[in-house]
Structure formats: structure tokens, C-alpha cells
Length: 408
Image 1 (cartoon, rainbow, N blue to C red):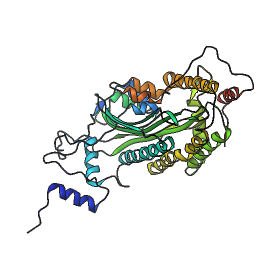
Image 2 (image 1 turned 60 degrees about the horizontal axis):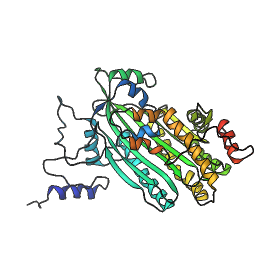
Image 3 (image 1 turned 45 degrees about the vertical axis):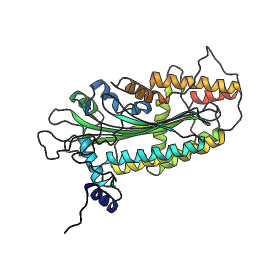
Image 4 (image 1 turned 135 degrees about the horizontal axis):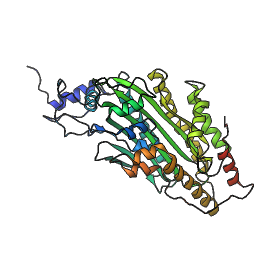
């Protein structure tokens, strides 16, 4: 006679044999199901999706496990299983392995990185991040990790987002300009997936720089869930109120080392792209001292590019933590704090006027405005016709912002 095993013990036994599997017991008559809806975005929105920036990425969504959906019918031809449910079943049965689809590996990677980043930054600040899991009425959700009024950070946000949806035919045609492989043979809406990690940190001390980071992955999929067209995007940049050359050099050097491991042309190419993208046109100055920025990256093997993105994201903590540790406890005056607020006003101007990601997010139906605007500083200032004193540290910063420097 075979020993009796409950459905829960069977699952736990399989998980013990394969630690990559999730140790979640089955509920009779139910299967785990994502809360993602297969939303369809209009062409004007999707034409911007390929260039979703920091805030726009947070307007997408993060799927998470739930026990409330009906059993998946995997053999139905008339009603094909949505790809998000196929992926969910794959993760439940096998976990995420090196052989998993790229979208699942990117999702797992940014989740792991979010955990590491907030743990490290929380230790620097001495105050933990508030973790906010949310969903939006039009489908999607996310995990926003926010630290506000901390000991070091006035406001810090580290968000991840994952979304499944459908591209209408008109949007598919527009995106074919940059991605020739995108196609909907039947003329029906095309399944897509997007995932990204977005972060902005605003320290209290005006000697400590603000930093921004965003890395993302986008793909369209065939009905069977196989990848059709895909690309990576992202970057990171530093925005000081007071310029310390050694900080800018360290930041750029660390990023360059990550780029050079994969392609010697990446750093100069993406550094130039960053200087051009983060340019406040109406002020005729850059937002900060730059970093790297890239989008629509699909010109090499996906494994190579995934490795590149992984190294760039992993380089963040080594590039920024030494800088914030050097500056967070420096003394400062009321006048220096006021200058920081003026510079943050310029940061707000760029994000609300020029950033394509913010615009995309705010114009997405059901978007969660709180998460989109987490990139904005807690405080900012606008002062009529303010001009820095000639020869001052403030004036030197403006000169560098108007004429970008090659730091390494």
C-alpha cells in the first residue's frame, strides 16, 4: 500500500527536491493566478512605451500571487490561456531557472535587486523603507519601496513594475519602425510584456547628490508564449547640488567598468545619449553630471544584453554608496540648503515638462499617480531671476551643467 500524502505535502515534497519551486500549498479546486488583466493600450500610448523612463516604468504594474482564480485549462483551443497565466504556471511548476523565458528571469532579477538595494540603503539611513504593494483598477500593480523623512534621505523610492498587456494593430505598425520583427499575422492585438526597476534618491544634505536609475525589458509574444521581438533599456545618472569632482569621477568610472566588460563603445555612446536626454531645454542646461542612458537595445544576443543590464544594475551600489557615505554628515549652511532647493526645482521642471516616462505614466488610464511622482523631491524652490555669485561653487556647477564634462 502506498503511503498517504495530502496535496499540500506532495507540493512541499516536490519543492524539497527542487528548491527553485515555490513552497506554496495548493488549495483544492484552485490554482494560483496573477491579478494582471490583459489590458489594451491605444496607439498614442504604445508609441511611447518603448521609451518609458523612470516614472513611466512605475506606472506599469507588478503581478503577484493570489489564490482566487479558477483552474487553468491549458488544453483549450477556443479560449487560449493568457500568457500571464502560462508564465504563472511555469513559475509554480519549475521556478525560475537559467532556461526560463527572458521575461521571467528579468522579473526575478529586478525583484532580487530591489531587496538588496533597499536593505543596503536602509542600513545607510538607519530607517527602513516602507513597502507598498498596490494594484490599479485598469490592471496591473507594483511594489513601491519608499523612505521619507529619514536620517540621510529626505525622500527615496525604489520601485519595480511588471505588466502583461496587448498592443492594438495600429500600435504594432508604429513600433515596427524600430523593431522589424514585431508582427501580428492574424491582425489581432499582440501580447506584450514589460518589466523594470526604477529608483530616485534625494538626500537631506546639499553636499550629497541625488541619483536616478532605471533598467527595463520589453517584449512582444506569440500566442504560445514564445518571444517575438524584445529589447532592453535603462541607465543611471547623478544630480549634485554642489559638485565634488571625485564623486562624479567615481560614479562614472564604476559605470564605465560595467560597460567595458561587454563593449568598449557602450560607455561613450550611452554617456553622450544621457547628456542629450537629460537636458532641460528651456534652461539650456543638463539636469546633472550624467551617467548612461540607452533604449531599444536588441543588436546582440539576448543573453549578452541581459548580462550587460545585470552588471549595470549591480554596479549601482558600488557607484553611489561610497559617495553618500562621504557626504551625508558634512556640515552645511542655510544658504546651501536653499541652493539645493533651487536645484531641485530644476529637477522637477525636467520630470514634469520633458521626461517622456512621466508623461506616459500620467496619461495611462488607472495609473497610480503616487508611484509615478515618487521621483519628485519632497521639497523644492523657485526664486525669481536667481543668479549665483561669480566665482562661487554654485556658479561652477552651472558651468558644468551647460557644458558636459568627460569625467573618465
